Amino acid sequence: MQPDTITTGAAKVPKVGLGTYLLTGKEGTKSIQDALQAGYRHIDTAQAYGNEEEVGKAVKNSGISREKIFITTKVMPANFKTLTAATEISLKRLNTDYADLLLLHWASDDETNKKGVDLLNEVLKKGYVRNIGVSNFTLSQIAKAFTQAPIVTNQVEYHPYLSQQKMLNYLRERNMFLTAYSPLALGKVMRDATLQDIASKYKRTVSQVVLRWLVQQGDVAVIPKASSTERRKENLNIFDFELADDDMEAVFRLSRNQRLANPAWAPEWD
Image (cartoon, rainbow, N blue to C red; front, side, top):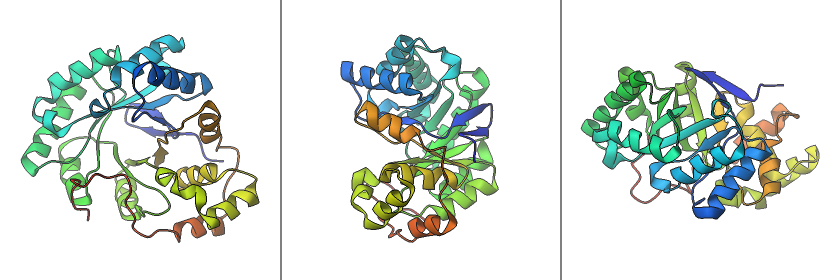
């Protein structure tokens, strides 16, 4: 059975994290705290989500020591050129001395990307962060970033309907890992007949099968969102079974290059 963490850089990254997009206000804090109580130790947030304070409050209220929780946050392109100051603001909102992983949230133009990656090196040296990476970078963009800094991941949309094999292979060959957001394809996988059949075979839910398919590939972490305590626990409970090779292949065959979560202004992908 595969381990439930990925060892990279200065940390062990839990393969299943909580995506916190739209988890704001008191209910957001409550949901994040609930996830921590359920066993989550990887929380993914971003400046653009407007909920770094909620994450900080949830971590504090959880009673779990900060060192046991892996916190990822992301810097918006508008702040790449002032990334050091932006990171200090994020740390204040998160009520922590450091982030476990800091990402550039979306790619910008080449000059801005280069400046952002240079400043990732700076905040790493300052101890503001333990690991650095990017999100939504294309293969050509991450190739440039990789020459500048010890990035450990690229966070991209990845689910059964969108193949990321080229990206995953590229990252794996360079000892990086892929972080999959929207791993359940915004809920569309729940209605898929092939996935329902596989789930029935293993006496699991469709979401468990999909998340298992992702992490079983190795070098993949997932950050699904979940609307209830039951769903959060369900998504976390995927390390006590394995999918057979033919079932893994059946899920791979569902790919149809369908992007669902990226906004219209996202860059072209290669």
